[in-house]
Image (cartoon, rainbow, N blue to C red):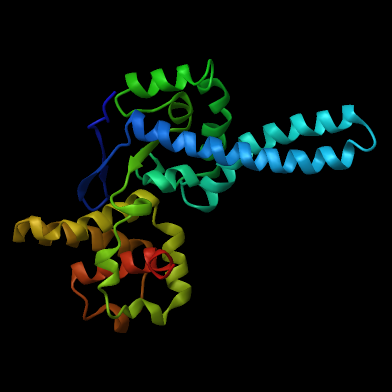
Length: 256
C-alpha cells in the first residue's frame, strides 16, 4: 500500500492558491493504531478504578459502568482532542497529521462530532470499511470524513510542523497586542496556518514575481481577518506580515 499523492488545494478570496499534501492510508492507519493504544490504556485504568469501587457493591453495576466508560472514551477521545488541539489527536501529532475542513475553513464542532460518531461504522468489520474508503476515495477520506466534509492533511516536520522559520524570528510587532493575536488564532483555520508556514519554508524556491504575488495575497487574507493598528504594521512587507502571523500562530509550539 502506498501513500496517496493527492493534495488539498486551497483558494483564498484574494485569489491565492496553494496546496497541502493529503495523508495516505498508511500514515492514517499508524496514527489510528497509536490512538488505539492510548484509548485502551486510558479505558483500562479508568475501568480498573470503577470496577474496584462499584465491584464492592454490585458486579453487574461495575460491568455496566465499564461498558459505558468504554464507549465514552472511544467517542470522546477524538472529539475532545480534535476540538482543543485544532484537528489533532496524539496519534495524528506523532504522525504529523491534522484534520481540516476540506474547503480550508475552520473546523466546526459539529464536523468533529460527526466524523467521530461515524467511526463506529468505519471500524466494521475490524476497520475494513474505513480502510477501503480511504483507499478508494480521491482524497483518502473514510466515511466519517465524507459525512463531515473533512480531510486529513500531512504536515512537514516532527510533530506536524517544521518550525525552523519561526525560530529564526527575532521580533514580532504583533506581540504588543495580545488580544488581537488571540483573535487571529481563533480566526485562522489550521489549513491556512499550515499553508502559510509551508509558503515561508518554500519561499526561496519561488521566482520573484510568484513570491511577491503569493505573499501579497496571503497578507491581504490575514489582514481581512484581524486589523492591527497602522503603527504596528505600516513598515512590514507582505512577507514579513505573513511571517508575523505564522510566529503568532505557532509560538506556543516553538517555546514548548
